[in-house]
Length: 325
Ligand code: ADP
Ligand code: MG
Image (cartoon, rainbow, N blue to C red):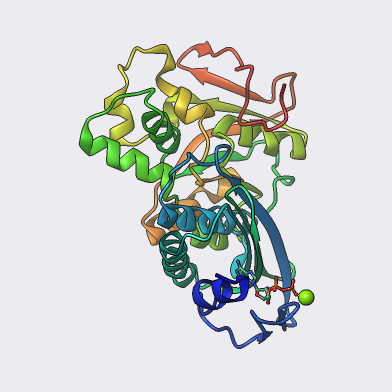
């Protein structure tokens, strides 16, 4: 099958046709007209088989995840995702796989209202690389670098399920069937918190999406803002499935929630005077927003984990690093 027929059959007509798009798939580049009063946010995320996902992961899950992780980066900036390009590297032309990938992508592109406006198709080890383009009101942005001393620290939803799901898929942790599906889906099919990001634009000082693990990502806010945090481990939200897996006295109980990645929740800091606004936003979105700590003056370890009266030792390996020996 020629490259052009792959593009015609599986890459065209994905997502809504935005009015601002002047040229999309089929030319040497896509062209769109940004609104006068908006800035453009742009980000790329790549997923490599065997590195970011397990061999044999169903194509529909991959389509879901590649778009969600990219939209999650927009959410973390308070931007509205609008366009995407997809560089698709495939080891062979498997039309069943392509059809499943394409319809998964279509569903997610509709969900996020993102139009696929271009990409590239090549032969090689299975790799998905998506560039997402979002829009942002001119004077506004969320970033990692604006946390303020005394801010409350929050995280949305629950953390830890995605890492637990991965451990289960790898055969490291056995679970009951009903729990298995829930945590595996948390790993395979995360949701980007786009509406939360938009809502936080007027409320939060700093924000990040939880992709590398809660502690690692909070540490990024600390470094960028040149401050530290105290986190109350008992306040970190975990799902009922997560709780039921771990013996409450187990030392490793919170490890997946603290250091596991791939949850794509938002972690953010807010001035304490604005707690009411966070509550209202949580209610409006039907999404728990849990206060887990506060921003403190910088010390040697950026994120101090407290549990009751104890300070937990800092973990050596924070988050996922690609280039460690
Ligand atoms: P060129 O040779 O000029 O780089 P290509 O032949 O690679 O162009 O691509 C033709 C058109 O198809 C371009 O508009 C490109 O953006 C689009 N395209 C190629 N691969 C994909 C893909 N995987 N997803 C979406 N669009 C794609
Ligand atoms: Mg060209």
